Amino acid sequence: MSTPLLEVRDLCVSFATRDGVVRAVDGLSFSVDAGEALGIVGESGSGKTVSSLSILRLFGLFDDVTLSGEILFEGRDLLRISEAELSRIRGGKIGMVFQDPLTSLNPVMPVGEQVAESIRFHTGATRPQARKRAIELLDRVGIPDAAKRCDELPHSFSGGMRQRVMVAIAIACEPKLLIADEPSTALDVTVQAQILLLLDELRRELGIALIMITHDFGVVAATVDRVLVMYAAQPMEYCTIEHLFDRANHPYTEGLLRLVPRLDHRMGGRLRPIEGQPPALTEEISGCPFAPRCGLAEERCHNDRPPLVRLGPHHESACWLATERAARLTTPGRPWETPS
Amino acid sequence: MPVNVVDTDRSASRLRAPLTAVNRRLSTIAAGRAWWGFAAFLALMAAWAIAPDFFAPYDAERLDPRNRLLGPFSDSTLGSHWAGTDSLGIDLFSQMVQGARLTFYIAIVATLLGTGIGVTLGMLAGYFGGFWDRLIMRLGEAQTAMPMFLVAILLLSLLGPSVTILIIVLPTLVWPIFARVVRAETLQIKQATYIEAAVATGCSTPAVLGRHVLPNVVPRILVLFVVEIGHVMLAEAGLSFLGVGVQPPDITWGLLIADGRPLLTVAWWLTILPGVLLSITVLSLNILSRRFEQYAGAAA
Image (tube, rainbow over all chains, first blue to last red; front, side):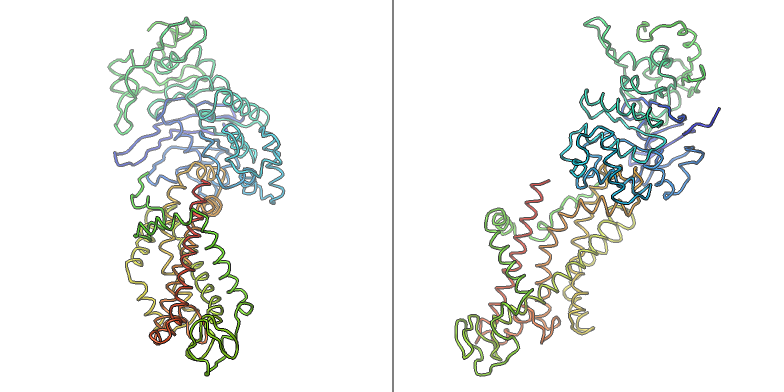
């Protein structure tokens, strides 16, 4: 098996704050092959954004961040290379799309210039060359009348259009990997679909690998091949998209899926939220972080952290009951329909 | 991200003007139509500075002992002197026109230097924080706390008064204000997602500062720059008045005021007229800067 494009091994990220050390990511491992799409799913504060930021070490504002583990990209450990080397990778080999398109563009710089900037940094193109390429890119991501609009400031673009510009910036230098951090969260539903479709198209067309960070299973279902579910800074389950919907193993994943409203459910049915709150990340968690909220929790769940149990070539679950549950679920069935 | 409470005081005019009633009045004037008048006045002063020979009716160096200390609106053998003449019989109006150039030159160059220093240091302090922030801001505070005017007098007396020394000394009066304002703005801007996005596209730190942070503080710098020209002009006039600034035969308005002082009881116009000119100029700069501020505020 060839080496993956990006391999994250045992990533831990913690921040020193006034309230103590916050462990934002705790023992995360995953890999992405060239051209593949991985979804990272979790609720707010589960560490999904922090793990994506740590790939490019975008912690400029936090002095007190501690990173450990390895992030291997094309054989180099991004956590250990110099800032200068990293800035060649940022935007060059790894592109990034942020959550809020309204604040992600510099308000006083024309959008074409912002696309061209990245091109000039990474390819050494001249201004006119970069501008020409920027117009092509804006046209490609679906900005109408790109040649004219590239001289306009971001405020004259709608949210969806700005996100398209962000995508254009991210793919400007034909990166190997694109990290999209909730790219559709701040947008209207119809625009969401357009952006997701655009990302999917570009990924297939340019062979870019994609890491899609989201809390929306609909987004995951539409765009990715494999899914990593995170909870309280830790990985819970790692599986293919088919496995996620057909045989989700971890009780947390199951709980989340039960919360997705379904068209084929009878009217008046209730969505059952998972009881309780996620643990504060400042506390030391000894057992499974989900144990206090888990209906199936046993003694060992509270005391010992469960290992990632390998259930198949592309399926891992961090649960003491994983094997048992996997056996029960091998018959095709839908986890959200099983009584609990 | 903890933000220092002091940093929220972003308005330079608020830092500089404790006279709130006057402050409000000036803002009202700036908001109305009258600012055109002040802008036109400044344009005239700029014209004086650019082409003094065109505006000055007489040679500002030619002595005329027969027509010494003529009052305003008097005539001599040369013609009318609407601002009067000084103790050597030189036409005061011509001197005021000739003085505009050096007055503006010193004020603008010194303010530019101060702006450059203040903006650079303020941006570094705001962006990097920590040690550099503390060092730069404490330096600025130390400087603000010291009576810089006295330090300037000391330096100028030691090094000897000259226009060059003046241009080197005056920026020290203004850079801490620019540093403080730019630092506060930078603290805010650096948290914006577009800065993070710029880093994520491979921008180096100098590129982030120069291309993304700086353009976003330009409006505020511009506002401050205009009002600080006035302050520097006053400081220069003060130093020249005390005899440690510009020396004859150079002319600035401050020097004219100083020259007229011994004769205040016999020839009031020698002091009052250049003083009024200086005051209106500083006031106009202030009004214009407020107009910019209001305009920038409305645009944002």
